[in-house]
Length: 237
Image 1 (tube, helix red, strand yellow):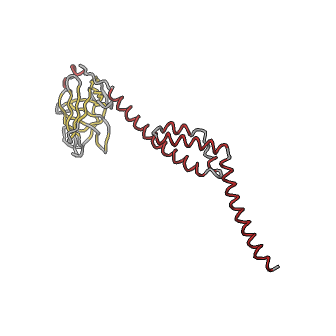
Image 2 (tube, helix red, strand yellow; image 1 turned 135 degrees about the vertical axis):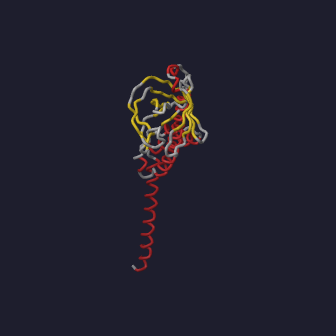
Image 3 (cartoon, helix red, strand yellow; image 1 turned 30 degrees about the vertical axis):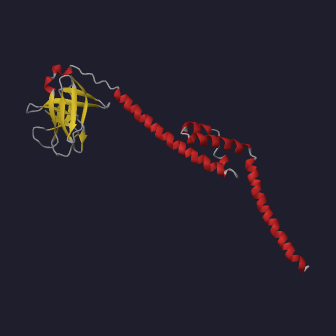
């Protein structure tokens, strides 16, 4: 009996090893024989080729029908890794493309801005001319504003940059915020406007100023918007 013990022990070890290999092979066969595994593998291979050729939308479409829950099953780990790698790449590139299209669309829209001149200032010549930016704290970059008789308007800053557009003027009485420009201080006041100046800039932005005459007889434009305890934009002729 003693002589048989080593043989029995060895036989036991051999049986355990074969069982482990058998389970591994069984799992592999389970995945490769699974119809979904074959289906998903083909879709992922097509998606990979399309992704590498730069057709990210086509690559995403090629993986339609793949259920992520299925990829969590035994034997699908290799497909799962490749699937999410391709998906992340497609999503990233398609996101970049969407942002680029939106930017180009915005540029295209702005190119179609109507900047036709007009004769609205013919009856309001007092508001035609050059203006200086009223900045009591001297911490803003705006410097000059010029309105021509045909409505052309240019706004410049200290850095040499300028915005071009077209303005129209119309009568409007409205209480709006401005500076007390006759005191050369940061004191604000509510004034009653005489006119409204609507501006369309070349980039498509719009802006509105309200014009009035100061106690000193100067033409003043204000946008009436508060800013840091003061007024956003006030221009004095």
